[in-house]
Image (cartoon, rainbow, N blue to C red; front, side):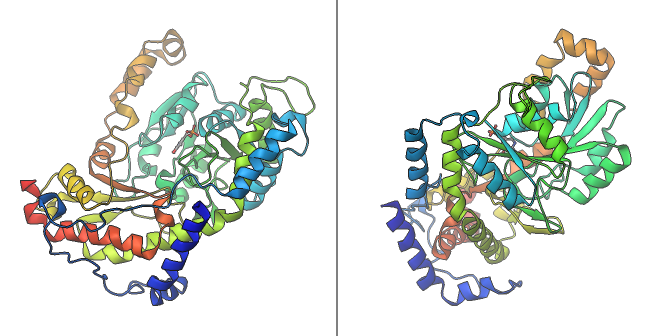
Length: 456
Ligand SMILES: *Cc1c(COP(=O)(O)O)cnc(C)c1O
């Protein structure tokens, strides 16, 4: 059923996109996609005011990705009785680790039970713990912060570059103290941070770099895969991510020595030689998760290319709408993972209508766009919790913790939280150009009717 759907979609894509597809596969220039193709009458009445919706019964390609190969791998694993990675030297997790490393261009990778566990394993393996500080972004999944807290280090948050939504390297540098041991940039939306500046700053201050690449599978910056630029890169395979197995994580590094340490940490402190040597929780990935990941690999690159092609198409065709500014990509960005496709909503171009009214009008047209992170993590209660803990008081002292609280004023992050509009991209960006046209036409229709937005 699913397979049939997909091939039908592909067929429609080929037929309806026609010459556009040819233009996209060549070098995409500013005019590669031509003018905005208006399928519906953009000046028509807004659906929320009783007009006809642009896409009344929109069905997106589903996510997570499932096909017969994925099902087959799971059944094989179930029948084999090899459910835990240490039962076999050639189980699904070990085989996936090899394939993932090959994809990333590293010698090996280590899998864990989640992105959060991968990040925590990296923190531990780098020897970072009580009394140490790691500078990261407030605009991220709670797992980023928790991976630091679990090791009883202090997550210090830097403000954002409001155009790229990425952590601002200059603010990271301002927040370095004598206790800072590492920078943890988060490649948000699966797009690269300003890694050039981050690596310069890390070098200058002798800091480690842990790339939170949990959203950034296969993304590339200056010819390198994200996760291979810093000392270590951590990935998530949670259901929504573009490579998914329910819950899972992966670690890569160009240092084999560090990878050995990561293996030991995630294996309850027990090294490959069987000796229990260090501190580490048990974060091992199980063989069922490995099986799903193996099943997802064959079409991974193709889906990645499709998302990038569709993202380019959206960006080009929406240039006519100044009210939605796409996420700024730093120079050197050659491919994103497009976990999410995001814009800043500029209400001054929408007759000053608040974002919520815009989203309501778009939803009525049959297209679901939404806010992303409601609050930066600097606004969550954990910041009050940790400063009351005896161990944090003991390790950092009152003066440092007071400064930590004071530095939680991150206005650019607050602004980004307020202005962000996103399209979930893992599934939707696998659609056809006709699907993208629905998004474009819904946005352009609302834009053309912006004078009516405040009345809805
Ligand atoms: C998903 C995610 C994580 C955590 O990964 P889990 O697998 O959910 O533990 C960390 N950072 C970012 C940016 C993420 O998107």
